Length: 432
Image: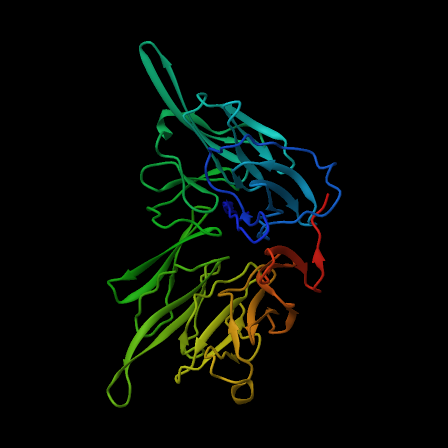
């Protein structure tokens, strides 16, 4: 499961009339100034206003309502129903929250419904780190009058047991290394996979963090032929040769969902002997080991395309004359539609050069949508370049998540509003 730490920062905006606004997400700290209060939701009868529409992480999102300078956080499911409520700051990862209880000098780890699944006092552990897939890393020190012993282990909140027994061997060694992977040795060759809950060993050192199941780095044969070296999260290593004929370096830095769209700058001389720049680009399938050169398809790629889980990537590029275009490709590099012209220059008029469309989102978002502006009006477009939803007056779209659009409504003289809309344009209420 992909995960991320959602960061909440409360922002208060003063208007002519006293209005409390804008807070968003979690912050990655164990300390909080207020005692968390997990409550049932029977008392909430009407839809709540939120300070920002957040992305869904797995099956939930966490939204905030600020009133009288106090932020109340609501954990909502994919039906936009409230699962639990709390105040204060927390760490959220994969369906668990680590919340500080200042009044009782302890920290609680709770699930999405507010049930406490693990609790510890201030001096019980040296450190407890919440990681992915319902696990924590614990470091504990025990002392007697003539001895001291510190041990570190990996504990499962779902199985209520240690998956890696606490040991002195792991002190200062177990650390996060990207998605679902923990380093457990000094040489970066032995890892614990939090998804499969097993130890994985590699024949050589892993230097780049894992993302979506892979760690990718550059490799070469005497600096003549370049490869992507691919470590999967099962302990396998392979090299994929670059399809470039110009022997350009490839890095694999932007890989996502098992695909890498590789772009590198290439300097050449034109017919007049002058140096010019273009990009060479290719795609790498990290699972199959296949690579394909797309340099003849895209002269100068201007974004860093990342593939979605469904296997599509948004590509923005320019031709030899500098005119910008965009399209969407699949895992084989096939275009889903004929590249469309993008007019980034505000001087262009619709009658002269088509709609003055600008690409707002650099990559496809959840559900394979992206956002553009047409005459300064934000619009949701699908992967096939069909218009899905157009913003109404004073609305801007900030993203797409869970088949819903994150909306910011802003009008002079009024306080800002944030909410979700479905893809038919209906405002979604967040209720019990």
